[in-house]
Image (cartoon, rainbow, N blue to C red; front, top):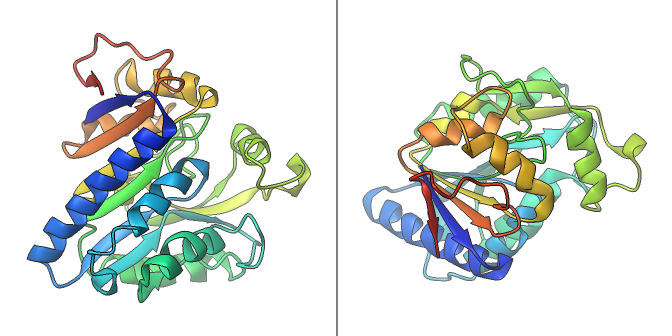
Length: 252
């Protein structure tokens, strides 16, 4: 894993999108179809806007998955991750093949439907973020670093639910669903390359827990440190508690 530090969210998003676009170009030159996992949330907004502006990418050959969805939330809800993915990457880029988690389906059926597609080939590239409690997708602490499942149902930590209110996706804590479907840690880590974005002072404590020590299930995103082709893009606010002496932490 490599950590890259930036002075602004705009610069961070632009550089992460440039890396992702370059990776997609390389992968498309070597593969007929490139399989990508996309994240949702405020950390991805500017990044995805920058990424889909790269019109030289043949998005029709990109097959898309996403990380998680609330149980009981349909695609018309403003906080739906399916809606986020459709509005911010599928439609703007013109992606024709996507496998989105149906929050209104019976959870086991929704999981099995996506898992059947996920096992058909390798995941080439994943975009992820880090939650305020260190979660990776909705793998809450303590996360399962070892499991045969590709997706699972989880009960959301209150910190995660409060984060969704704080970011403006829900009006009150009671509005935030308590259950979600998430891609598991091993499924995410199977991606051949990972681009992670994290910014803002609210993420500083999580970044410190994840990257100032060895990987631990109590800080789920800390597992990224074991991935040879993961790059974490962090702004100065999120990096406030980061140990700059560690060899993975480089500045831009």
